[in-house]
Image (cartoon, rainbow, N blue to C red; front, side, top):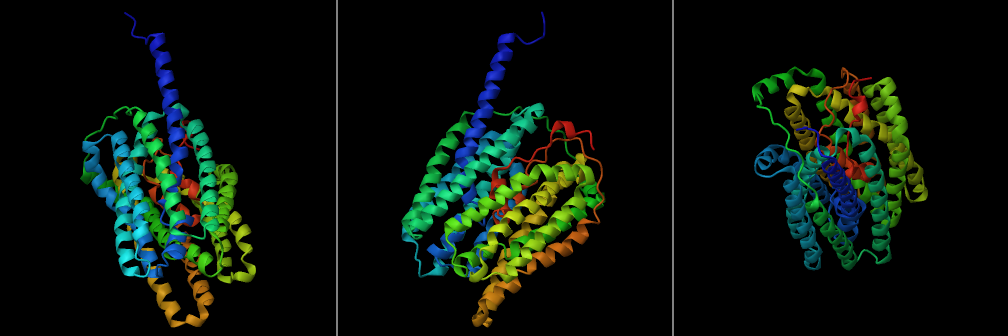
Length: 468
């Protein structure tokens, strides 16, 4: 008998794949509101912390550090979860837990002791820790699951279109949420309404996730951890890149959460105006990504990344001169920032793809994510403490205090670029995806003003496997 598949079987398989790909797109479209709100820095949480709950800077720094701590923790227990649950069920279960945590906080906001910031911070921290941990585990499971579901020949075209559609969904949510918060003057009810809407949409997302099939079980080879550890230790360029990533994460996250606080409190901008800034940055990034991709292909990653990073930090220097009289600068600043930062973000993924040794891929990814996460988690706590101390010491010079603090990112990041230039860039590796390795880029994307990256699927086209 012939071993070729029956035509009816092939047709059925194609229909099943089309349905799966369609469900994945629909799921992403309706999941974007709750996923975007889960970033440590976004318009909604910034408005909640500053306009709704009036939290101190130290408390904001503590709460916004939690997603990075959770990225660090999941590195250690996700392997144990994978022994019990498939990537599909890991995604469904932990996305459900994440959804429940947001439903709970929507109810509890009515009972928040607004005038007792210590109690408010305590229970908000507990909530955001559980929520962020569930999101971190679900995100890793989702990346593994979806990339295994999509055939290699379709990944470039499919994920490119999916990422584009999700950016429109995220834009609509940011503008709608910003408008609602401004229109109803940041009342508790409007915060609850936005959360309730996001939770409602997430329920449909969970239903569609559950309808998607299991991914083919990959063959898991026996691992020699000692040999992998030696391989990672011998990868000097990878270790230099990890060190650079730690420096960059600290620079971006130290005062990153307080850019939004500054806009709300000192520049007296509305949630809608800040949402529009995020949309402008995302627009600039989306338009420039293809051009940056061509530059990365032609000139290599580290040189283009360095150029992109330095241009980005030149733009960030203008934060040191902002006041109510010239806050209109922010519109072209975020457009320029989104445009030039896209090359750095894309280059980080591509360079990491080249540097990770194939024979120790999982361990190398874990080391990179653990180191950068723990450093990123410490950054906003330090920034919140420094900002609180400085504002108390010089209360008559609040703008100057913020301006000096905003020097940290351009200075530290630019110095970190010297370490990036020391990385030796090898030829492209043969594997097609680095699952979960860009977790911190997604987590930091709210600070970048590029929150469309939160549900972005980083992939490498099969045509690029053979190198440049």
